[in-house]
Image 1: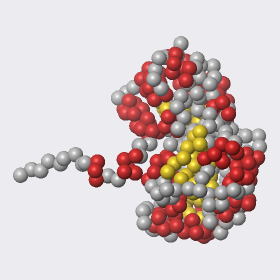
Image 2: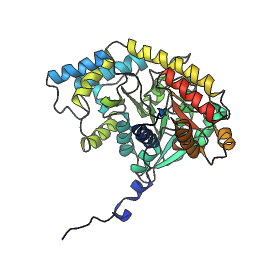
Image 3: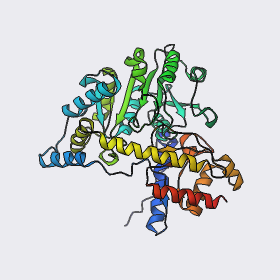
Image 4: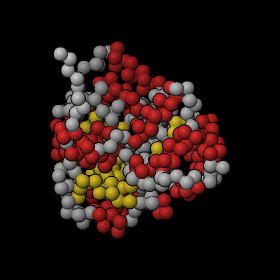
Length: 401
């Protein structure tokens, strides 16, 4: 007798898993790729991935690692060589003095964040997340059985918040404040002064940890020096987990290497969690990451100059489109225009329907702002060629005539 597999009842799934949504950026990118596979000419401005190739000297380090047989398990928290390179990076770039026991290497900064949330959150504990936020923060908090508390900002205040805003959402249940600078999706970067204002509020809440996602640190063109939170606020160094990685600045998304520095007790807990999930990050990728951190940064500077050039174009071009208005970014490779007037002009319901409209009518893939906690906006990535950016803008203008 042949057995038929029935649909699995949702009763067997945990409540926290059922509350989590699939990544909107991955969903949009998959839809765009499916249309491309059908032969439809789609310009994708949805993926958060550099269009540049990994620099040759980094690729060569990976190749040499394979040839030398560096293809075995490594320590869970990373190879000694990579941890030393990370310690040196934090010291040189951010004036942060860590020891190897303060460092954890993971399979991408996303896993770093996941490990952190699992280590410090539980039922009844809250994580404050600034909106617009990277799409995965709230769902990873839910998976840790914590409660995401959203602190909303808006286009009107340049997606910034003040001391009073922060103080209003912090409670005795707050365990973690999540910061991201330069921001995905807005490209806005916190200044040293802004961080110090935040720190004055946090000093009144000694049980709150601060996590800073600095993934786009090197993709930055602001006039002021880039500051990581712990560098700007040394009094809170012992409460800060500084997160970074090689994916964006070095065009190494597929290599999957993220890392962080933080208090030994927190790092040890994160290491324990990682040891029971993926264990170590790829040995070959770690060898390549050593070269990325220790080698020449000329390619990083070159890519950043090109991102800045594209930003200048897309910022001016979008602000000329009917119903669009956007703020100037100082880092990352995204722009996050408010499109409420465009949605109303087309008699559409929201930014989700508007994004579908652009995909179907203009053949341009963007991500709805709702996924980032900011309705009425869309995120466009300019990690693509200037030629495609110009064509994308032309197409959007055409459907909004």
